[in-house]
Image (cartoon, rainbow, N blue to C red; front, side, top):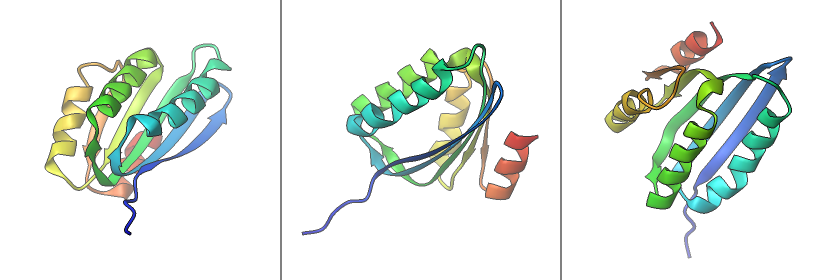
Length: 126
Protein backbone atom coordinates (compact mmCIF):
# COMPACT_ATOMS: atom_id res chain seq x y z
CA UNK A 1 0.00 0.00 0.00
CA UNK A 2 1.47 3.34 -1.01
CA UNK A 3 0.51 6.71 0.37
CA UNK A 4 0.37 9.92 -1.60
CA UNK A 5 2.00 12.89 0.06
CA UNK A 6 -0.06 16.07 -0.06
CA UNK A 7 -0.95 19.05 2.05
CA UNK A 8 0.04 22.52 3.14
CA UNK A 9 2.59 23.61 5.66
CA UNK A 10 2.45 27.15 6.96
CA UNK A 11 4.69 29.55 8.80
CA UNK A 12 3.33 32.79 10.25
CA UNK A 13 5.53 35.64 11.45
CA UNK A 14 4.07 38.84 12.90
CA UNK A 15 5.64 42.17 13.72
CA UNK A 16 2.94 44.62 14.86
CA UNK A 17 0.45 44.80 11.94
CA UNK A 18 2.80 43.19 9.39
CA UNK A 19 2.56 39.47 8.66
CA UNK A 20 4.75 37.16 6.64
CA UNK A 21 3.15 33.87 5.62
CA UNK A 22 5.24 31.12 4.12
CA UNK A 23 3.30 28.27 2.56
CA UNK A 24 4.55 25.05 1.03
CA UNK A 25 2.04 23.12 -1.04
CA UNK A 26 2.67 19.45 -1.81
CA UNK A 27 0.76 17.13 -4.11
CA UNK A 28 -2.86 17.70 -5.01
CA UNK A 29 -4.57 19.88 -2.41
CA UNK A 30 -7.95 18.84 -1.02
CA UNK A 31 -10.90 20.50 0.68
CA UNK A 32 -9.75 18.80 3.90
CA UNK A 33 -6.40 20.62 3.64
CA UNK A 34 -8.22 23.96 3.49
CA UNK A 35 -10.48 23.03 6.42
CA UNK A 36 -7.28 22.90 8.49
CA UNK A 37 -5.28 25.81 7.08
CA UNK A 38 -8.07 28.41 6.62
CA UNK A 39 -8.95 28.76 10.34
CA UNK A 40 -5.25 29.20 11.15
CA UNK A 41 -4.91 32.09 8.71
CA UNK A 42 -8.26 33.60 9.70
CA UNK A 43 -7.36 33.45 13.39
CA UNK A 44 -3.93 35.03 12.93
CA UNK A 45 -5.29 37.92 10.88
CA UNK A 46 -8.40 38.48 13.02
CA UNK A 47 -6.25 39.63 15.94
CA UNK A 48 -5.05 42.75 14.11
CA UNK A 49 -6.84 45.79 12.73
CA UNK A 50 -5.79 46.43 9.11
CA UNK A 51 -3.14 43.71 8.80
CA UNK A 52 -0.63 43.87 5.95
CA UNK A 53 0.33 40.45 4.66
CA UNK A 54 3.24 39.34 2.51
CA UNK A 55 3.20 35.73 1.31
CA UNK A 56 5.76 33.33 -0.10
CA UNK A 57 4.23 30.23 -1.68
CA UNK A 58 6.52 27.33 -2.53
CA UNK A 59 4.69 25.41 -5.22
CA UNK A 60 7.59 23.33 -6.48
CA UNK A 61 5.89 20.14 -5.28
CA UNK A 62 2.32 21.27 -6.00
CA UNK A 63 0.44 19.15 -8.52
CA UNK A 64 -2.84 21.09 -8.36
CA UNK A 65 -6.14 21.23 -6.52
CA UNK A 66 -9.25 19.17 -6.31
CA UNK A 67 -12.15 21.26 -7.63
CA UNK A 68 -13.56 22.02 -4.19
CA UNK A 69 -10.09 22.91 -2.88
CA UNK A 70 -9.59 25.33 -5.79
CA UNK A 71 -12.84 27.00 -4.74
CA UNK A 72 -11.62 27.10 -1.11
CA UNK A 73 -8.40 28.79 -2.27
CA UNK A 74 -10.37 31.36 -4.27
CA UNK A 75 -12.67 32.12 -1.29
CA UNK A 76 -9.69 32.52 1.05
CA UNK A 77 -8.11 35.00 -1.36
CA UNK A 78 -11.31 37.02 -1.68
CA UNK A 79 -11.90 37.05 2.08
CA UNK A 80 -8.48 38.56 2.81
CA UNK A 81 -8.13 40.41 -0.50
CA UNK A 82 -7.36 43.87 0.88
CA UNK A 83 -4.92 42.53 3.46
CA UNK A 84 -2.43 41.10 0.95
CA UNK A 85 0.46 43.38 0.02
CA UNK A 86 2.71 40.99 -1.92
CA UNK A 87 2.39 37.35 -2.92
CA UNK A 88 5.44 35.62 -4.40
CA UNK A 89 4.80 32.26 -6.02
CA UNK A 90 7.92 30.14 -6.36
CA UNK A 91 7.36 27.27 -8.72
CA UNK A 92 8.60 25.19 -11.60
CA UNK A 93 5.55 24.69 -13.80
CA UNK A 94 4.17 26.91 -16.57
CA UNK A 95 0.60 26.69 -15.24
CA UNK A 96 1.78 28.22 -11.94
CA UNK A 97 2.90 31.35 -13.76
CA UNK A 98 -0.51 31.55 -15.43
CA UNK A 99 -2.21 31.04 -12.06
CA UNK A 100 -0.24 33.99 -10.65
CA UNK A 101 -1.46 36.22 -13.49
CA UNK A 102 -5.08 35.14 -13.04
CA UNK A 103 -4.82 35.57 -9.26
CA UNK A 104 -3.73 39.17 -9.74
CA UNK A 105 -7.20 39.92 -11.13
CA UNK A 106 -8.77 39.09 -7.75
CA UNK A 107 -6.19 40.24 -5.20
CA UNK A 108 -5.56 43.92 -4.44
CA UNK A 109 -1.85 43.36 -3.73
CA UNK A 110 0.91 42.43 -6.14
CA UNK A 111 1.42 38.82 -7.26
CA UNK A 112 4.53 37.62 -9.07
CA UNK A 113 5.79 34.25 -10.17
CA UNK A 114 9.45 33.22 -9.75
CA UNK A 115 11.44 30.14 -10.68
CA UNK A 116 14.13 31.13 -8.17
CA UNK A 117 13.48 30.91 -4.42
CA UNK A 118 16.13 33.56 -3.73
CA UNK A 119 14.50 36.04 -6.14
CA UNK A 120 11.02 35.32 -4.78
CA UNK A 121 12.14 35.86 -1.19
CA UNK A 122 14.07 39.03 -2.05
CA UNK A 123 11.05 40.51 -3.85
CA UNK A 124 8.48 39.68 -1.20
CA UNK A 125 10.66 40.91 1.68
CA UNK A 126 11.61 44.17 -0.13
